[in-house]
Every structure is written in C-alpha cells, then in structure tokens.
Image (cartoon, rainbow, N blue to C red):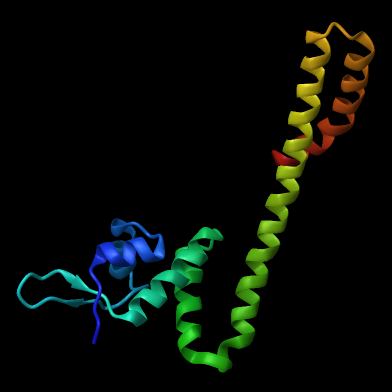
Length: 146
C-alpha cells in the first residue's frame, strides 16, 4: 500500500499542512495513520481523494458543517443524493448572489474611473455623462451594503 507524507498531500490537494491537520482534528479527514517509528502522518490514496474534495468545497466557500455533511453523504452514496444536491444548490445560490454584488461593484468602479478620466481630460460632457451613470448605479450599490 502506498502512503503519502503530509507535504505530498498538501501539494497535491492545495490544502496547507495546518489545514490538513485541522481537518483531521475536526473529523473531516481521517483518522490518518501514523508511522510507527516517527509518528508522522501517513496518508492513503483515499485520504488524498477526500482532501481534494475538501479543497474544492473550501474553494467554493462551503463551511465546515456542510463539508462534514457532504463527506458523510458521499459515504452514503445514492441514498444521500437529494441532500447532496440541496447542499450544492444552496451554495450555488449564494455564489450567484455574490456574483450579482460583484457586478454592481464592477459597474461602480468603471463609472467612477470614467468620471475621473473625464476630469483628467477636462471633458465636462463626459463628466456629466459619468455623473448620470453614477446616479443610476448608486441605488444598486447601496443595496449591496444591506
């Protein structure tokens, strides 16, 4: 059986060594076997697979509790398919909301940039246009702060 050191799992999963230790501590990974002579963690291929899944979930902003549920459901297989779908769709909705917020922020930054560009060029017409666009964006921007 091939085993991997924590450095190898960190490199292959993208999770830092402290994160791997923490995930083991909170029960998301493992238990991880230890080398009898050194006490160092020795990860199996299945541990690496779980670490890679956790890295993807983490990158999506999924919290520890949902990660734990997701991992337990993976072990349950098809019987947990509906719950897995619901977890993922709930987070997809959250990401969609974040994208909408970021679009408003991007619009604001572009319009403010155009405003300052118009001032830099001493273009009163372009400055007035940027002001008008800014007025239309401000209500949407204020909504993102609530």
